[in-house]
Amino acid sequence: MKKIISALLLILPLLSGCFLIEKKTVILWTDIPEVASYVEIFNASQSDFRVEIVYSENPADYQKLTSDSAPDIVIAENLASNAVIRAFKPLQKMTEEGLLDPSVFYHGLYKLGCRDDIPYVLPVSFNIPAIMYRQNNLSENIEGVTISPEQLMKEAQLFNKKSSDKFRVMGFAPTWVPEFLIYNAFINSSGFSETENGSLIWNETKLNESIDFCRNWTESINQGYEEEQDFTLTYCYDPGYKLLNSGRIGFYFTDLRSFFTVPADDRATLEFKWLGTESSVPVSEDIVYIGIPAKSRKTKTAQQFVTWFLKESTQKKLMESAQFKRERSFGICNGLSSLKNVNEFVIPEYYKLLIGKIPPPDYFKFPENLPVYWMQERDDVILPWMEDRCSEKPQAGPLADLLKTWVLQQQNK
Image: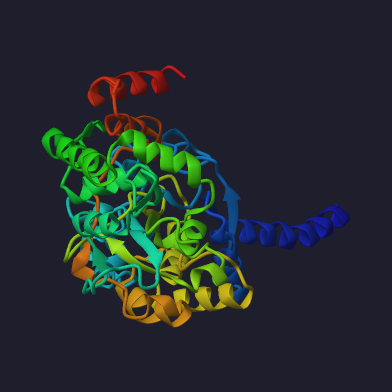
């Protein structure tokens, strides 16, 4: 009997140690590769507890987030949609206890993760559209950090060159990159947003106006859809940055994230301006958030990681580490930070091309909350529909009908 008791006394400390290790480990779901290095740095920075990262193909899956196997932290897109945000804990206690200061965020961005002024998920990073061009391609000095679609059309027209009745050089075509069509629509206040029940709504009149603008561009500036397509099929087989540097085209659509993937030697000859208006820039819809699922039993521990991650000093360390390791990702989670000071003072320190080019906080025009399936819906239905509407002989039916069919197909999968 004494031997059994002695054995139990030896085993109990090991069991309790395992229990403590288990209790101090939080599970983080993400589909963003950069997060792995952030977790590694956090775990190495302290010994009180650890974060274990798990790759999830769809971290915003509401059913999984509300199951007993839910993680303790999620970093992903689509967390602020009405269909998903209910799966997360309210975070107002973090503000009450001084762990979270809402003023460090862009106000419009922070509000996307709130319901009734209570934060449920917090923004991490975002991306913005841009127009890149070879140095000195602009015919005049367009002041400021933005270029509007109207200004771009004027510049593209001046860049067009024909020989033997065929374009040999073209300034820009709206359909070269379909994403240009959607951001032109955002700039024109098309009003894509989510209803309370998760449906997509928009301003039909403004959307059609944005399409008409692009159709007119093709017809009047590029002398018709056939001419534009002939040039595109003949010459546009290289990446946009190569076409710019060869002088074949004058301007090309990109975004901040993509611009910094251009090889350094090619990027050295290029400039860029944000696509927007004189005083606003539309923010891309693929905003990254962080949240603590309501099912997590380790809220306090999860809050420690969230607090650490959303500090200016932490994000400076993360970018410093990425540069030291020569990682190719940009900024925080491959985008601009949700923290104003990080964008204004830290990011330009590591990305010299952004010195003097970060838009002021009030320039950013954040999207409305959008359905959880927005990005897939946009790519599968909306962008092809817009391309069709910009073609010589549009064939697609009303957008509302196409979207209704698409949603039903997704529900039946």
